[in-house]
Image (cartoon, rainbow, N blue to C red; front, side, top):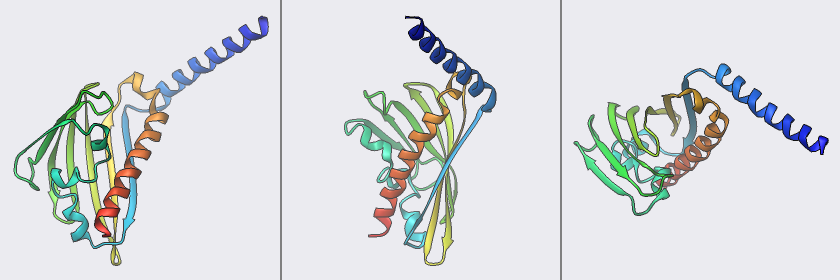
Length: 177
C-alpha cells in the first residue's frame, strides 16, 4: 500500500512540477509555423489562398463539422474578405476570420476571432516564396496565451502540426493537379 501511495504521490509531484515549469518557461506569445514546397508557380498557389472561399477549399478545420454554418462577407480576395462559422461541435466552435493584409502572389494576413468553445484572437500569415518552378508555402499563427494554456503548449504544438500538415497537403493536392 505504501508503494502505491508513493507512486501516486510521485506522479502528482511530477505533474505539479511540470505545470510550474511550463508557466515559468513559456512566454505569453505563442507562434507556430509549418512550410511545404509545392510543385506549382506562386500565381497558381495564390489562387487557392487569395480569398476566404478559396482558403476554405483546403482548410483542415472545415471537415470538423459538415453541417456548420458559414457566412461570407466583404469583397472576395480583398482586405475585409471575411467568413464566420458556427458549429454545434465544440471541436469546430464558432468565430470569424478576416483578411487584414494582402500582397498579391506573396502574402495574406488574417485575423481570427474565436467565440466558442473559448474566446481568443490570433493572427495568421500565409507567405509564398518562389523556389525555381515550385513555391514554398509558409503558414503561421501567432496568439497570446493565458497562463493556464501554457501547460497545454506541447499538446497544442502537436495538434497544430497535424492540422497544418493536413491543410498544406490539401493545398498541395489542389495546386499540383
